[in-house]
Amino acid sequence: MKCIVCHHGVTHPGTTTVTFHRSGQTVVVTEVPADVCENCGEAYVIESVTAELLEIAAQARTANAQVLVRDFAPAA
Image (tube, rainbow, N blue to C red; front, top):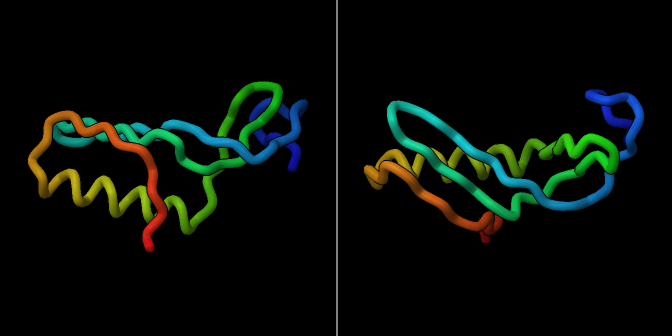
């Protein structure tokens, strides 16, 4: 698809890093599947992956970790 941010690049399958900040807690998820713009690097994550990312963030809140870094692993 054509990038809606830069309007010049086309997206290709790749990965990105997603960071959440909430109430003094930081969650970093690496290797998240996304379509990434070849020009500006903007990443587009599909809805099902976003739902899994939100679940990861919720689990981190219950773990009381101030900083949590992990690779993305789709739910089985």
